[in-house]
Amino acid sequence: MSIINHINKKNMKKINARFKSKCAETLKAIAKGELMIYDYQAKICYSMGSKKAIEFEGKKSNDNMGAYIAAQEDAFFDNLFVSNRM
Image (cartoon, rainbow, N blue to C red):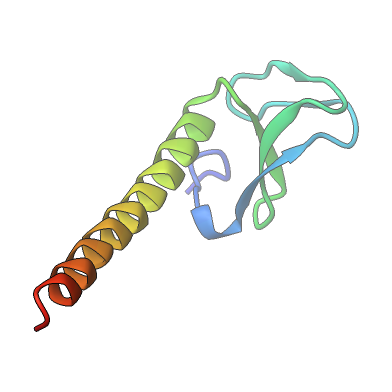
């Protein structure tokens, strides 16, 4: 398996580049201070326009959406039981 094809979201974070770098997927330059996704295990970075970064961001927002929906459902049922004295 190639390092570029490897993706483990647990070890990836969105950070600001500390120095000038290059995206492992698109080979585009990443300027110092620009947002990027960094894979700490493979020690490679991805520009925010790369497929890996978009996939990472999508996964992250889907995880947050699930937690939000669960919290809304819990609050609904808590209020339902309180108002109906169950």
